[in-house]
Length: 448
Image 1 (cartoon, rainbow, N blue to C red):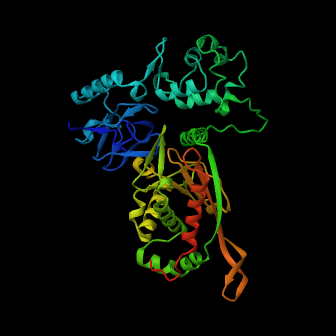
Image 2: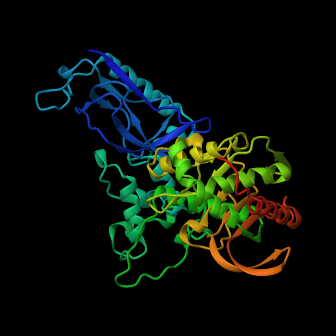
Image 3: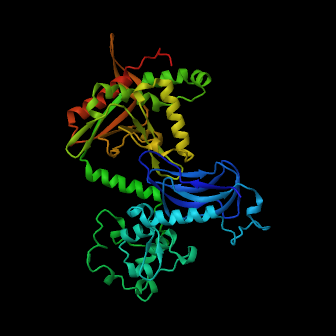
């Protein structure tokens, strides 16, 4: 009976672990080659793990919400055909191939020796097991061990799952004093840190929020929590200053209207304003390379590659920032293809972790939503970010050889937020002005 170990795939140089969020296949299910078996999540992106072989899922080696190291076996697939399952499709539990036993033993040894959060499954004094994710939520919400042990789990063997603890957190503040959960001696569980539950200044959970009849309590999803933490961290880390410039982009507007049909016919791509904006930003970075930096303590890291992040809204309402690596090496056609590819795969949840990391400067197009201005938050560890506002028609005074005239022009605001620890107003202001200059000097006769 041929057995295949499905391995947690490598998802980028900076990603060492992933959380299993959902098994798409159950033990006994038939799997086709390249068919997704489970969904996983990292601190960067969600993705699916496909099987490179066809067969029958014999054994799941981890449960949902377990944290697994890259390179570890997560499932056993029998590639020998239907003899691995009984007539009704269920796995014959009395059969345990030597390969499966060996893998289970290896996984158990790895789990017992892995470092801290990576693959640890903590056991309480009463014998209950808790995944690292459940432990983390409990710690964040100030839930003591005794209070955690009092919860009734709906997972395998009565384990407390992420859904269980989040449901408890949602009702914890309004539960009656005599309720089983509230009756658990939570206070004695944390005598060494008596102020821990209240010491959450950046956590909305520490605020006494009124709940009115008819209100709906919605738990943040995993990605929204990550975004929330990252934004708060950025505001605490960097003193933000924002400079604004209004740019006349009439030439760009007219040029795009003129070439967009031929561009799509020749290149098979729609040209938007985003790659044009990125090209101008790249040119300005070459003029002012001290914008393309990061701060490591008191050390300034001046980046050689120009990697432009482009904020993209997801159907869920969350935000993700795919990165165009070495954007300075791409022409307008290359930038257009890169922008469209990353935007499409972002919407379909198909980005790889490496594609949303390594940015050195970020662009966000708030004009997509009809906003004329924005004050964006810096994407750490970068030191600056630019927001492009909506392009609107305005009457403007135009200087001509015959004198000043009033004409209808297409204009937009550029908002440049920067870290005042290392970028002063002069540099931050000159940079955004230079980007506007490149946009205003656009050649209406330019080829693609």
